[in-house]
Image (cartoon, rainbow, N blue to C red; front, side):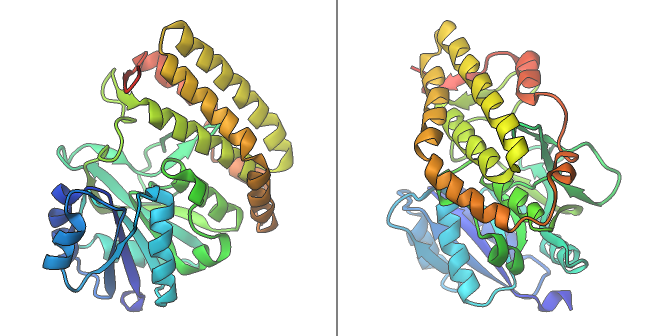
Length: 344
């Protein structure tokens, strides 16, 4: 029975006191009967951990001594939950609220097919609940993310789902591992879903399972609104650093040698553009992403060897799920130069 599977709901928290009460209240209303809540606190300074200890004695609280980032912070809690014998890990951002039947629908979907390794919900905006933030994601060949094309199907296969809300089977984590600790934040969900696909699992979205997400609480930007958007230069570094590592690890040899050098060239030209328009810190962060990967290349290649050993799916099947073109350039043409926080 689907409702007998043990689910560990992991909420990674960093200074999220303003969101925790509503998030946990929505979890209390879940119709799914067999779950435990783990809050992993990344050394918050806003009293989050103290608030949880005082008001939620039934919740497991893991208190990290430092801000370990999204990837490593979640991994600490994932390891704890797996040792407790959980069947599923459900990662959930602290700035979310769930409809009461959301977890039930996600588990039912995952249980319906052994190949369904990771299942995500329909993610709607917390303030404007008619606005879709994510219904599954795809990428171009350079790893740049975009929304999957709208499907009339309630349950559909996608390339990856957001780490803000993803249900992961125990078997997936035991096979391909959890997040890459080196990512800190950004692209860790893409990397995990890509590795899961290579190992033969499918990534699924169930639009009937609905959550509401505030977004942007940890670091500014990334969401394009109308014809304008705002981002942070640190986000640029983390995104490009992690994307390059993902491409190196997960492509087969032919596609890696075709794609990675080309993308490095594109990033180099991009950094020159930022310098030319006097966005020097942005240009520096793009170059930092390249040099970080050069320095980390021996470790990345060791990780790549593990990923490729687990491969069951050919790249022809993987690349068919990617969009054609260079989506980053399309976004730039549509919205122009973003506003950068901390750009000087």
